[in-house]
Length: 109
Image 1 (cartoon, rainbow, N blue to C red):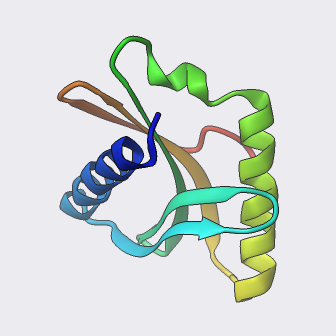
Image 2 (tube, one colour):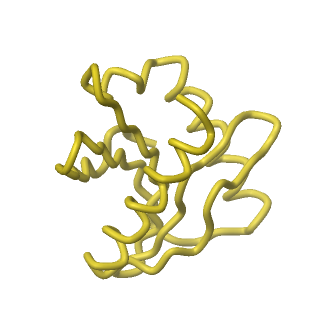
């Protein structure tokens, strides 16, 4: 997927999350371990959101164990760097054509 297509999906995801009552804290946080697409806050819980979209396949399958490992390492780095003291969750936001599905707490930390 091109960066432009990814940016459109992340824009759509951020809009959806704001409509659902989330406050967007940061987008595209990069570290040497990987990237977090969206970091959002709702009800004093910090959500680390991986955004996936696709036309010819189910995008949920793009979150592989290797990808999840990179996400978790990046989250741990972010927590240490920003000195976060909140409950956290790792979520996936899946965009399939016009459907958006938020899968909360896709892994245990």
